[in-house]
Amino acid sequence: MDYNLGMIPNLTDSPREECGVFGIYAPERDVARLTYFALFALQHRGQESAGIAVSDCGHMMVFKEMGLVAQVFKEQTLQSLSGQLAVGHVRYSTTGSSDWMNSQPLHRTRNGSAIALAHNGNLVNSDELRAELLEGGVALDTTSDTEIIAALLSEHPAEDVKDALRDVLPRLRGAFSTVLLTEKEVVGFRDPYGVRPLVLGNLEGSYVLSSETAGLDIIGAEAVCEIEPGQMCWLDEEGYHIEQVVEREKESLCIFEFIYFARPDSVMKGETLYAARSRMGEKLAEESPVDADLVIPVPDTGKSAAIGYSARSGIPFGEGLIKNRYVGRTFIDPDDELRRLGIRMKLNPLTSAIKGKRLVVVDDSIVRGNTTRSLVHMLFTAGAEEVHLRISSPPIIYPCFYGIDMAVQDEFIAFQKSMEEVGQEIGATSLAYLSLGGLLAAIQVEKEGFCTACFSGSYPISVPDELKVSKFRFEAAIKGKR
Image (cartoon, rainbow, N blue to C red):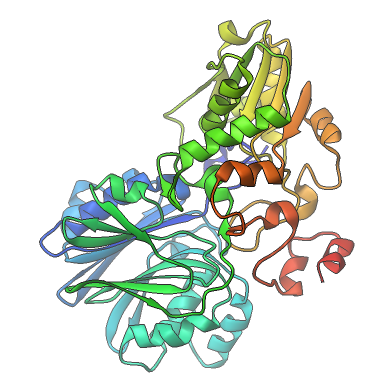
């Protein structure tokens, strides 16, 4: 079974979250507190560390620590972070180890002034850029590719950081949705493919940037627009400004934002994620019907799709798994007996509801299959007569290089296996995935605007072969991608 820090098992076999970023320019407002609540709303995007940087009349302060937002920031800390503008970050490590040195925002000095940077995504040319910086005598303190972006900006000779960005952005290859704090402005920018999201919001005449609209809603801000691929948006005393810095490529928003990553109450591409996920469940019911008594979700990731499956199939929706909502990250290891119980630390079957029932169990995805196998076994042990597993996305068979932690290719349970073989390995009565065509039809937005590489192997941003070797364990797979 997969374990995170503290050895608590993952709730599902879904890909690990990315990161969440937030920025605000709001004189006369408590920007640290507003950033805190925004990060609280973005907590699902990263649970390893949290940080806030504030600028106050040329003086910058950064506070960051390992742990959840509510663990990292106390009232006294927030009161000490005074300023007019701020950026914040919640992190799940994809490049760089999980330790304090790699937590964000990252702070550097530029032309005698301070900057702080928070980044969601992953660069595919980080080794090349790192070697270039080291050769030029630039000191790097972390293993994170975020520091590479910060170093390129801090070492750039341009007086205005926006001029530095105009030169640096075209050199970055990969996924990046980033907010940058200077002593007088907040700057946000996205990669030319738009792999990671960023939205602009209006807070009673002040402006904010957030990974998702959920980060706007919690502080009472209204969405203005999504920052488009290749754009830079800066917030200052005049309001907001948007500039196309890098020529826009074919948009490739990570499709897992729609499947799993973003909160169901967030809006992307004009679509509420809850509605899109419900339609995924409806399409799944059309493609893979089954005679059953009850549809249950794997909480909470499968709930929206399970509701859609139930509505289209006519099979009643119900609760069959109860989530322990007070188990999050912990730094205390369970003993051997608790580790053996595994998934029960977060989920427990509602025996009275499932005993003797033919169940349709809906979840968003399967990566390695370990947690799903334990879940299926637990349901049968609790008395389920049949367990029909339905997944509201296609099989994951290719690794991600753009900032999602999945696995190397030969660890994917669906790699080189038929759907029937995967179902047998998991122990389900039956297994079915939503087709890629069904997924795109359910989203009901421009179908060419997504990265589907984890399903199709079609990578929108070219990946160096040396990087592929780290995640493609089979030589034939690498040759097939050339």
